Length: 173
Ligand code: SF4
Image (cartoon, rainbow, N blue to C red; front, side, top):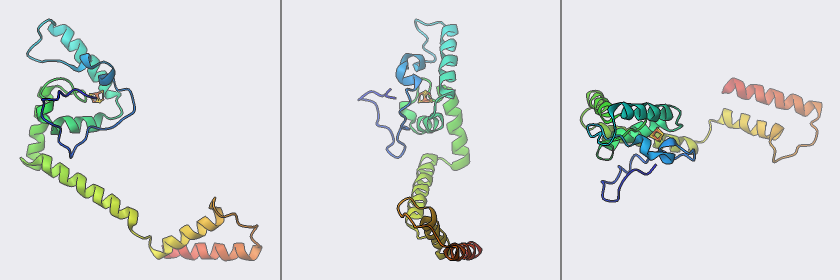
């Protein structure tokens, strides 16, 4: 979605707008979401509310609605108007006040720090070696079923040995 103007403040780089390949309604029909509340010139209140309801329905079916709301809350200077994630500017003000109550006046930094910690944990988990027992099970499983290594038919004795290794690994896990 691109509803910013080059002269507008830049979005907070810690919270990129959620990527999706889905053709979101706000991309296809941005006018539906451009509701200037308090300035309904050329539009009746009834028509504006009808559009608001249509925008809300679209957002509720959008795959990135949660991340979109987060982005809209964090990027207050960019979202002073219009509908984002089914919310009006007034609703977003209320939500921001709740976030201040819950997380403090620097709630945006708190959220950014949490995101960073989550990313670091996920990254660390990728490189943490498996405990020995689990590694043994994975190894055995690869030997038995792995697509890369074609094992010849195991003898009854080999099968028994593998089973007992697997059971021992499971017990130790
Ligand atoms: S939630 Fe609504 S405003 Fe946000 S990307 Fe989806 S359709 Fe657009």
